[in-house]
Image: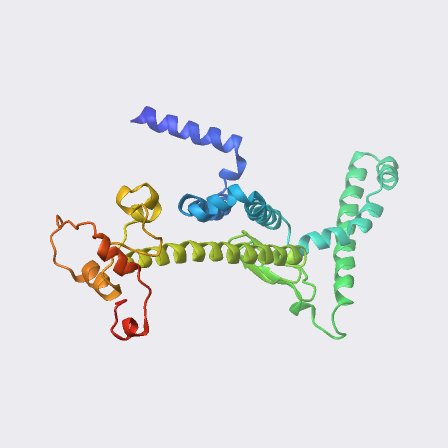
Length: 314
């Protein structure tokens, strides 16, 4: 038992080294959602091709139709991963980019060399520390000034500072508790995508929603066609007292050859057929005789007004 436990632990550590994304519980849950969504797409589309014989036949006759559908499926999944892997635009990244020019100018190699060459190592290290503190102060002040210009005059800095990450927020920003970061133009946190929707990926998100909506609508239409064809076919068989084999292989059955397609030899009328199918107490071993030629001729005779009034069809 102990050896098995050690082997399992070693295997888990090896998997964590090979796939770092599986070591983090949060990232593992995100990848689990992505795999689940892909499986949902594959299952729903796969069931269509397994059950819908008409779709398979249409694929052989008109392959472009299925190619467009499957191509749209792949494009939707690609857009999903493209959107889920994009950054929503975090405030900390915007702050870093906004201060990049100031940081570069302050931390130039020439300024550092001059500071180091003035005195001994102790003095140079002091200059570096002072330079770092001044650099941070310039970064904070430059970001504060940038954000101040976005708010109305007289606004309080307390209202702009995030209480969770202590970052000065621009207008329309909000702290996301799932990502634990402030997001520019925060819209919402999408669980299925595993990321926030903000300024950086809002357009990509709506393109994904647009493609997913078309794909879902298309798939629902295909399912409706599948179900309606099966329901109509089954109901038609009940109303005419036929079996699927008799309907599909009618020309191969000897005693049905030569009988017109619109004539159903074993039909007793719609009402009688329904009653026999739903409420009949005949034994499961009861057998029916093939109708005589006179009965078939009577069934083939067109309906007249008198037949309809006398409910001959029923």
